[in-house]
Length: 118
Image (cartoon, rainbow, N blue to C red; front, side, top):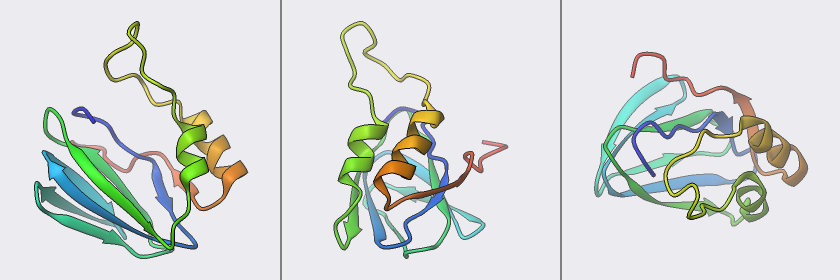
């Protein structure tokens, strides 16, 4: 992911989400508070707890795990493949994200990214 990539504020009603930052740094907004997490760091969002993240460095890589497993259909339907015509970051289509969350379950979108001064 590239600098500025942010997720909407959301919850996972039926799964816990664990995010391991492999490279770079993110700002994790969880339960109303912001936490900086760098390479080697971990964030765990228990089911039902509102959260979002923002990439702070030029790039970042994360491993995200849902327990129990879920949400694969959400990610497939909420994403658009990168093409050679558009190799970099594109604006997130939040309408597509909301539609995928509604049709696939597992994720409840609460609102836009909560990052105002970053």
